[in-house]
Length: 174
Length: 100
Ligand SMILES: [Zn+2]
Image 1 (cartoon, rainbow over the protein chains, first blue to last red):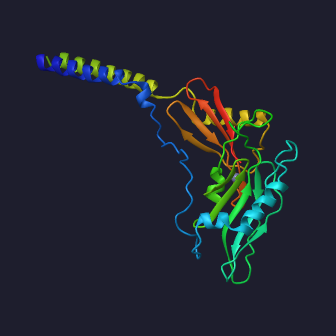
Image 2 (spheres, helix red, strand yellow):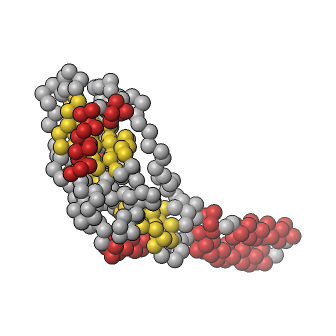
Image 3 (cartoon, chains in turn orange, blue):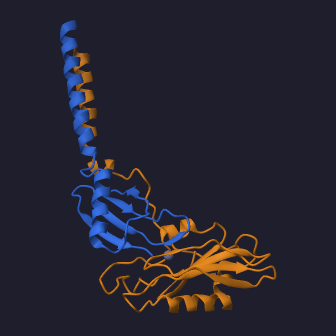
């Protein structure tokens, strides 16, 4: 009988310890946080090219195309601002060219099927982000925009190619 | 003796079941995943910055809030999504922001 009571007390102690276990501890997320880390340009070149992300972003043709796309985005007009962008191609001689997409909407753009030059390939893509405003990302209406490529930007890009987004602070490769 | 021992174990069993139910209650959140999606959806609609047409729903459970985002479904689309944080206890929207 004594042993029986001892068992009961031991069991109750375990249960009390379980109850004392903080609900906050129990609420630790079941799914790991998917925080977006710092964006670092790829160390290696995209598929089929020996150009790095930095070389592609700094190519004069690409830089000029990104500048033109930024101008076309009407970033300073709160009513008409929209995204612009396009593919970056590399031809058989290693020269980079650009094929623009049709104008997008305020925070999205449709990447039309790529049509690389004969013997060439897609090595990257770029688009503009006209909504983010320094220093805190908020636009004239107080809407908060996060800087950098969206989850969708990163997921939709062909692995191994270079993505570039252009906003008020400059360009970011991903 | 046997009868008494039986009663003791019956008592312990009842206590265990009661405490397990209490314990489960402590561990659960006030706002369910589905409720959080409903709250976040309404918040984005009310905010009026982005349409939810053609978008997926992605839910990440954080320690104190549900993080819900609505990325485009189409593989050809680039662009941003609304992100809403819903407090797991109160159901209040604690943060809303957009990517582009
Ligand atoms: Zn984007």
